[in-house]
Length: 191
Ligand SMILES: [Ca+2]
Ligand SMILES: [Ca+2]
Image 1: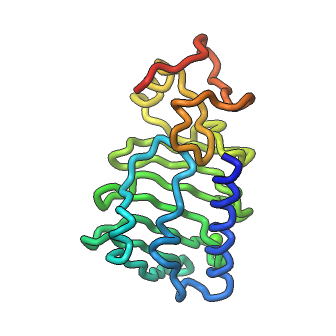
Image 2 (image 1 turned 135 degrees about the vertical axis):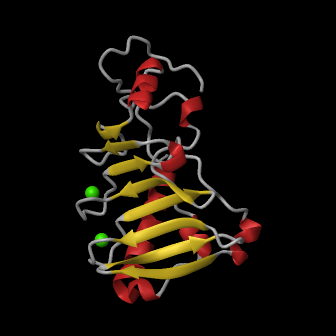
């Protein structure tokens, strides 16, 4: 997890630096852009094969003070959308797509270079988690549908460690298993 974190931090630095020095006019390579991953593990999104990277395109988008990059897949479908929404030349929204629809977004809402919001949308449901201390875990929900809240209670929803794709199958490190009040079991049934 540590090396993963360092790696993504390094990539983030590259993207931030590119944004600072070259602006959105110099998009990253598709390979670099596609190396970004959602901060939460339970996200289903389109991931092209490495052999398809050459057919993916990264294009510059601008809308008002917002600017950024859209990664298009081999068929022209949107795969990622990374945006600087507040015009400080640093990416603060990272959108991940499934079949052309944005299904998940990491957000740095206060421009401190730390992701503090996680949002599931469209076919991925309707959840918007807030991470108050930017440790990679949802601390509270800004929005969650009644259905998902009910499911979360039933499954004794656990916070998801940052950057660990298979964390559900492994024992989380100490201190990473905080549970919502009312959960009595320490284990979670598989999905
Ligand atoms: Ca920004
Ligand atoms: Ca932040």
